[in-house]
Length: 114
Length: 116
Image (cartoon, rainbow over all chains, first blue to last red; front, side):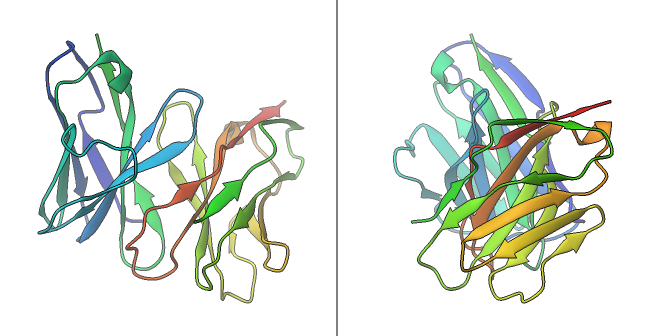
């Protein structure tokens, strides 16, 4: 199946700093990628849709100025958590469709903000 | 709006038994797709199976099959001959069935534990 990678797999940062997470489709081109957030023992919640060459679409309640998304190419989307705070600590996962209806997820990034 | 309901927070099953994980959905869309994912403790989301709303036959992928009952709006996952490695969280999800413009809506998940 299609492969989606994420980097880093985990990150610890101080409160107030910014963190960038990369999502790459390794063997296919993705005009659309998706970013999800998962708090402990909860389900995945869609944060935003990342569109190559245009602005991201954010779900209701997600601060677009805090979670900056850039879809620079057909294989790369980045999520930057700006001025991170402890409540932003979570598991962030990206996904993409590799042609057809199947949706593939990256391995996730565990963010801990101290 | 789409909604996914998984009513089983946790399940204990004996190894080698078959398992059915429940999933019901609600949508006003005529065309949609239903997905099941496995999430082990590592956190990765492993794609298991997909069913399109217009697919007449139930989807099967190895030991996984999807019992799709459109009139009842249910899409239960059946795992045959369960193995210890099947222990994980299982999520049912819904999305569009076509070009992938929409993200997925997930249920709350079922924590499956396979006992030897």
